Image (cartoon, rainbow, N blue to C red; front, top):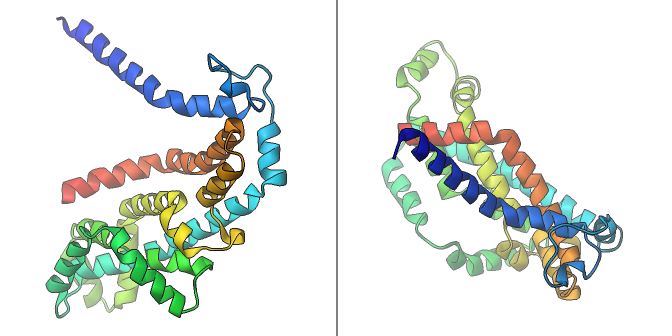
Length: 273
């Protein structure tokens, strides 16, 4: 097989695979503009006969999806900000600061990576219950403020910062906070963006923990709100597709806007090990 034919075959396979992967997303958008019951006809239509905003009007004017959207934005943003603050400081400390028990503590942290999150849900719920935080935004935000994966990710990246640079700053009289804020943070920008995207996407899509911690519908996030709507409108596929589009669009826009930093962070992290 000539190189030109091989290249054409590879490109064709890649384009075909991309179309297969993207087709469900495109059909979801198309169905969201169909009238009620139109998607249930046989064969299923690929495009709305008469595109309409009816499903989005129902979602925002009657179903209260705007409130769920606000809750998701507020909770995901708060988790991302707190996660960046705590994970960056902890990861930098494990990588560059010397203190008693550092290696043992880090090995304990690594052990937490293999423990399923579901194992800790019951004791965590009881702790929040005794603290009076169940059914509040804090019940969802605080448990995600620092993660073993985030600390590990930052620590691995921060190990690549030259020790000589930090020692030179200390000799010049800079405090540890000034070194962290003015020297370390700019160097951690790629991994900061990567961690921010990981954290925001995880918080945005999380269903299980908000379902446990939030008992009142006024605090529901978008996944919980859509699940609640699905129970009330089990046969309205068009409405559910519109809700799915509302859920996907913000995180898709975030990823497309930050993908350059995201890929850069992943590649640099893999090189520095």
